[in-house]
Structure formats: C-alpha cells, structure tokens
Length: 189
Image (cartoon, rainbow, N blue to C red; front, side, top):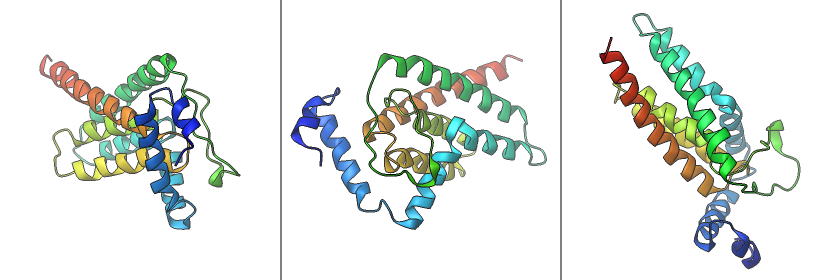
C-alpha cells in the first residue's frame, strides 16, 4: 500500500489512490514471475504505437474474401484515437507515472507524457470494439487481449490502475462512436 502522504498527494483524491495502491499490491504478488513477466512485458511492447492492433487488422484483411477496408478503417481510427488521447486528453493532465525501482526488464520504453489516461488501454479497447464488430464469436478473444494489454501497463509500472480504467472507458466510447460512423459512411455509398 502507498504511504498516507502519497495518498494525500494523489491528484484524483484518496479513493483513487487507494484503488491504485490495491491494484499495485495485488500485482506485486506476481511481479517478477518469469512467465508473467514475459506475457505482460511482451503485451506492453507489442502494443506500442498500436502495432499489435494494426497487425491484427492486416492479418484479418489477408484472409481470402475479407474486406480489406476493415484494416484501413481500424488503422485510421487508431490514428484518430492516438491524437485524441495523446495530444488532447493527456495534455489536460500532468499525472506522474508510477515509480519503478531498479532496472526494468526487457528494455521496455517508458513514455514521457502524462500517465493519465493510458493510451495503450484506450487503443486496445477501441480495437477490441472494432475487431468484434459483426463477429460476436471473436469478441472474447479481442476483449481478452485488450485486457491483457491494459493490465500489462500497471504490471510494468508505467501506469496507475486508474489510468488504465480511464483509458479503457475512452477506448470503448471511441470504438462505439467509430463503428457507428463507419457504418453510416458505408451505408451512404
């Protein structure tokens, strides 16, 4: 748990600080486990710049009979999401990232922007919404993968748990808007 002084200094208040501390304490139980380290550091690194989601879109587009425009729509939407979150929302906050003591395994990149909200979580859940559109049987895969990516950011101590929750909410909202917009644009042709 965080010391009382850290809770008092939390910009979002003591309830959020306690939530973040509880999530961090829970993940402390598995941090350093070689298997967990591999999964979470790999997920975090692969999702840098939404690479994982662009690859997923391209892989689906490569399937015979697939609509390649889906990959383009996903990539365009991820670009818009990145601008909204990283240039817009993050600029409104100056939240400090969690402290990581010692050497960070696997050479993970540490972003220089505000910790709030998590862009990885936002892009992950936006991608999950879009990749699941019209394919409900695939939804558990995409949302499960989004959850791993989002959790990885807390696990590797690059984000607070509340950053990830906010990022996921933003991603879900942007994904819902994007799927409606793309449907309307497709229907108007």
